Image 1 (cartoon, rainbow, N blue to C red):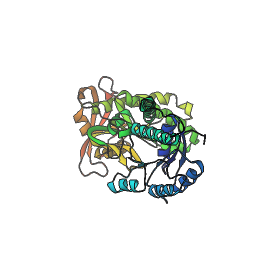
Image 2 (tube, rainbow, N blue to C red):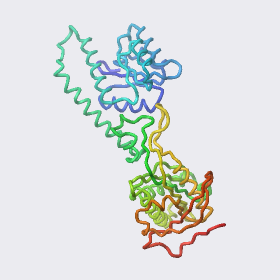
Image 3 (cartoon, rainbow, N blue to C red):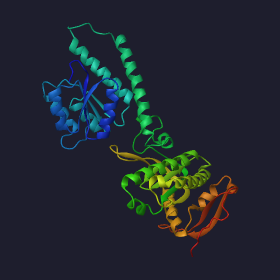
Image 4 (tube, rainbow, N blue to C red):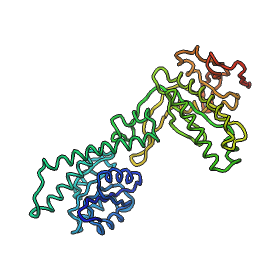
Length: 391
């Protein structure tokens, strides 16, 4: 590494954690190198003599505590600052970090501003020690602007990361799982709310995919999803998941989520008609058809998984029921099926043309409930729309 440069060694067995740390530190002008195991970290440290080491604890083979012990036993590395970054938040682990002579201990998720400020302070202190008797020392007042600049840069990096994260997690979900910013994301962040869930699935997708190269399927599927996403977002919903050829959308606007879901379903049908008009662009011989199931109920919206790998999700019976209704659209021959709970939640039911279909217990359910077909808006519903009802 370059002489005089602040070079930080990152040690973590999770590539995602390494990627975020590299982006954060390099944005501040630090040189970084990454290691995915304790053995690799020791080899790099002995060869490169890093200025500071950010060290995970839970790693296969040699854990972070053992790595720190080895560092402190090496005369060339025993004074190298070590900061533990770990998901272990118990008191015994924290004490162990002190016993092996770690310089600090941060629990994930890490406050990035605090971490950057700590790194800057620690490196400056190290430079002061190295420079004692060799050169004039900067006053703390002269150092402070550098720290302020570090904090400002962290905020800019957070904004950039947030914009990227929005490509994977909608704003409505982010506001629930990261209520005070990216640093507040952790497993178990969740809120309960009444929502309306919409499931949409492409009919005969397997047969379509078998009839054309995978690249063509990929192209038209992305074009299709883009248009469906616009129809859903326009009516205050967001797509929680793409499940192969299926979409799971959530509508959570208080007092309006059921109505939003119905207007979105109608918009999706119109969008589908427009898409089919130009389907030959994607080498599609037959029109694409979809089935839509909609149900209203209570759900938990939050993060699920572990400290090392988590995902945002929506959990509840409302999700399962909406999926079952989508399956029933095939049986009844209806493009859009609604549950009774959706109809009951409509603020302006007179706006929609809805027809009762049957009273059934969806697969996996014990209790029967009324099913309804959504024909369209009352002012523009197709009077010739047909729904085949089977006994």
